Image (cartoon, rainbow, N blue to C red; front, side):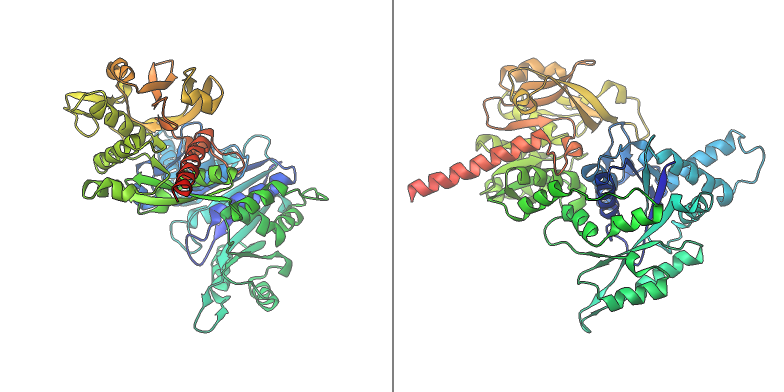
Length: 544
């Protein structure tokens, strides 16, 4: 039977439950176990698809087309767990299902209440979230102990554990040991109070993972153990890692988190857990031979999490080339009011990410034009690919008033237009073209060199598309359609083939990149940017 680990958080939000959960999955997989991971979110939105990136960070898209919390990106980047719509449930989705059943008369006239109907639905979601054949299912509970929104989820996991044998479930609580600079000490009282909140509703943590800036003393460990009713060996330190979040699995293994889990759940022991690939990754990350700077020209640039997967994918590719990638974050709308060449001076590559709406489009187009005219490696993703198409149509193909109908529905030349199946869609949530679709890679193109295969499957999240009415005219002008969804003859990728790297893709390759397996598009983009930097330095040396 699948065993369950419930991960909760206390004291403050943004402690890193998602990364801790993902790191634990890595450690258990290294012990030969099949792991599933699930996130239960207390917000009332059915999913984060309608939220502004400023509100909740990026919307992560799974292979099966579910718009999910960004923590699912951590799960998939770190582990091999199968991630899909079963991996996320929210208050909104739970209540929607309960109300549907009530309206359909499935409760046979009962008064519908939080207990047992809402909690039963949560427990059903937990069971569904455990992938078939999984040895362990790790379930992260969003929010913080004590939040009103989290109470039904905490009650549900309390019941879930009570209904199963003791060695089939366990609770891991992530908490904070705040450091007071004035007194020069860390405090355990917030942790005690957080655990107290859980114990009030009947949850006794089996393991405490304590986030801290400085090493935890044995005295502190002993005090936490005594006041929180947790064995000293199960009070685990999680100190801030100096290099990269991908060091967290190594740090947690060092401090015994996986051993504590194995003991509580009575899992098979392993003589030696081989973490050499992760150790090599961290070593290369910490000791780069080169450094490059990539300009990310976006609409939501002020919030790092809005483009979380893109930054991570660039870093993955950089590490594969022993290169530290620095990000020059540029708000697209700022490129309307300043000299573009000054904003992009000295960069080694330009990446234009996705986004919706008019704000920032013209700035993105200006960045693309500068990059094309200055032979800078250029990578457009989703709306970025559309910006590449519009810029090329206006400035190379001679279609001066080319635009997207998303911004100007009455434009004379919509080189980007609304997909036919989207024309009568009114609801916003979960109605875009979502998930993985087949893309045939056109032979003898840059894309074919990058993928080295004739068919790939990539994830989408869009309503507007390349307008095939202009395809022949744009291709004659030099913008090659290098990726095609053959079933509907949709252009999935465009490129300037005689450029070292000038590629736009309608899909989101950042969702399929991993630290130990960078996505080939990011890999080649970083490689081209590195070549530009090395060639530039070599030319400067010759001149000197």
